[in-house]
Length: 77
Image (cartoon, rainbow, N blue to C red; front, side):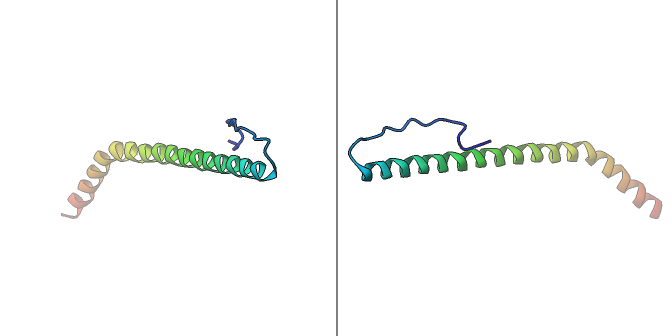
């Protein structure tokens, strides 16, 4: 996703070059914060999805792994 996905309305003052620079700096800061927020959101989503997948596999595989270990140790004993 791009940082320009969400439009931000910023008021433009007609006072002079100083206020234009300040307005541009504020807009750039807002875009940067929005991009970081979106990156963090995507990272948390990926973490949640992979974490859930790992947990699901562990829940499904745990009983089978236990049986495998019992068979291995029973054959030795």
